[in-house]
Length: 237
Ligand SMILES: *[C@@H]1O[C@H](CO)[C@@H](O)[C@H](O)[C@H]1NC(C)=O
Ligand SMILES: *[C@@H]1O[C@H](CO)[C@@H](O)[C@H](O)[C@H]1NC(C)=O
Image (cartoon, rainbow, N blue to C red; front, side):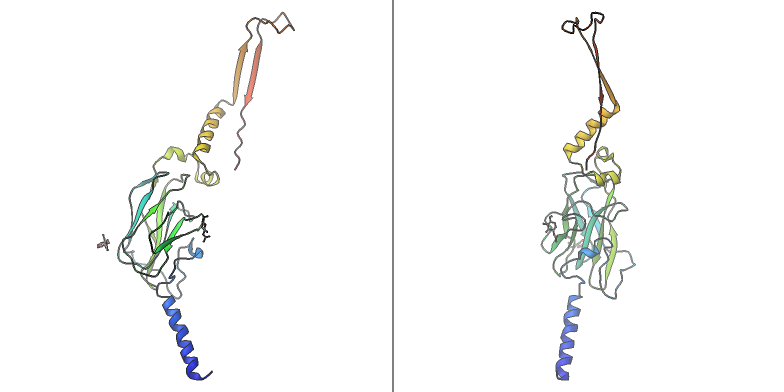
């Protein structure tokens, strides 16, 4: 290959590489960024200054079947990775149904639990709809990585804490809640069996009215039937 061609080829490759890197991930954050939320941008590091972005929420509480509006307020940005997370946990919670054009969801721990950009363009003050999962997990927060360009990005931009609007449904510890994925029907059943468990033994005493038909002994005027019901609760996952 003549030297001129070699130089041109190297030049083209470098141009393509630098175009790809303008916004880091032109088509959104990959699964590998799910937990750390740190972009894999080469030779860059997150801004240490206070992010010029804030995450506004349409409510300070979340409740099953009640979607929330999440808005990223601030200057224009090119890339984003957004998740709701239980406080001090790294697994996302809830889903982003049908995000705006130019955005998409990725499946980090569960389907549609994280939101990222899908095309390379600048945007500002975009709102997203978010749905809580069917099980409550106590306090949550929204966490985002927001990139203005390849070199300038903030990691760990946080919303205010969002509390569960129905704390009585969150009687389970976080650990239990993650293992027991409760549907409404299951939750009702568990409540009932818990009540039953309070009286571990239920004694049903039946008095025979006149002893007729028993025939075995005339000494007994009354027949006591004691039925002991053992309530065994088996939680099957
Ligand atoms: C994400 O989950 C949905 C629902 O299960 C599935 O249809 C989709 O293919 C998943 N996406 C990827 C990239 O695995
Ligand atoms: C975005 O929100 C900021 C802060 O409220 C405001 O100054 C700016 O004009 C808004 N930009 C657009 C395009 O809505």
